[in-house]
Image (cartoon, rainbow, N blue to C red; front, side, top):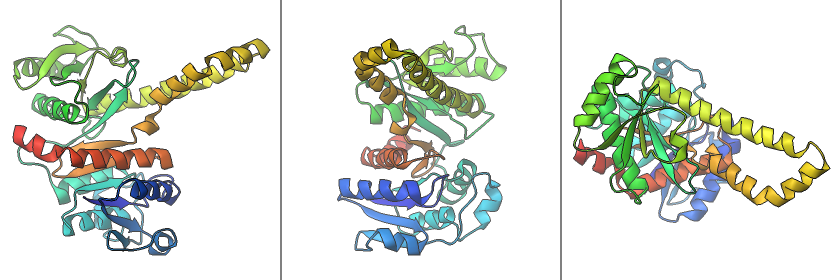
Length: 326
């Protein structure tokens, strides 16, 4: 398996990617791995070998960079990484850098799969049911979508879910909306509802409101990228707020602190379940290769999770499964 890693992207850069990559290499011995970044710092941390390749880049794409301008910087870790991916016929590319720049560069350079209208960002979310996840597509690649694009997101999301979570052979698909009735939402929501209902390749069960997916009924949540990104950030913010509120509650007095000692195990399980760092990366689904966008604020734990996502998606041959279906 050939994997390319942008070591410089993201808010934390090498502070996150170096320890995560070291752990990843130690866990998997079946890799040819290409590390893109400052050659001096890479050589200080990795020994180049038959299976570990250090590739120099000179610049870093800023997180708020204009995507088309970012593509012109051929010496950035992002663009050098994509060139390395293509030149060596690699299986996966991972970056925590600018979402817009990664999306644009991957679409123009690695290109879409045949038949795909638009790529989308997809990632798993936790639920209240232990070890139960659902996936959301799109999470921000496309702020405006039409019914045909949302229909493809449902198909690709179902394949993604079946590939990663074999416990559900016929994933339950819902459309994110402001109500459960078929006539609720925008005109696009209404048109999409009809198209999804007619689609025999998916198990579409209707609309669902944003408050309900965490209860575990959903396997695939279909939405445009604008609504999906708001859903994502709201979930992250809620998890952080709840964690902060719990800390304050248990520090209130001595009795509360004693109560915490008795409930510590359950609280830690809750925090672990809701921690986005355990997911780490979203797949740019619809691109003709496994391209993973790690969280921009990735720490070592989060970035390692993104690397594991890439590894698993290559192993289950996700790209060919989607090509066959589309």
